[in-house]
Image (tube, rainbow, N blue to C red):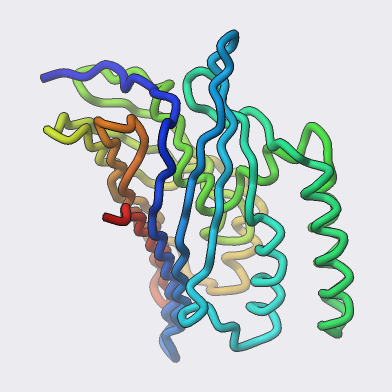
Length: 272
């Protein structure tokens, strides 16, 4: 059975999911793991009769047992991330986020958090990091694009409803954030398969052959002088027939060189 397009349905009932993120880095000397768990709740708002748009609110609660920071950098990131809980998004008629709503509320929340962070951390890096976040969270036309670079939001909202499949296959490029400090362009192949409970998209791909990714190249230089053997992505994205929304994701991003390897694993499951 061929599927040319996935039909979008506005969300009617809250989605309750669990997100697990694991990052590992391996060198010849050591292996480092970071593991984080979150409960994710997506709560729907009313659907506009005129435009078909809908507001949703995304709540993200970390599992305290698995998210205890063990250094200043992790603690800093954890405090900053509280600003993004919750986030209100406006979706268009085909389920794509178009704008972050309640931007002034988000900004005020950041300013309060910023004061606490300034009083909690010391070092030359603190003010530089805070200024960078100031620019990202400033209300305006850039805020939506900035926040959609969030690891979960970028992975969950893949614009699957806009894709046209040909003989159950789609090829395209995605920008991935969170694997390293700089964005990476991936060329991906999606293969869709119908299921009794919905449909399954299996995807795989490699880093796109784009030579002007200086941010990524600079970051890699800090890790290894070896030539890259491979950067690839593999996984699946499952859409539930009843809700029309994603209810499971499994993704692995992997970079391999001769003496350095980094993997990012993302698992999203639905609470029964």
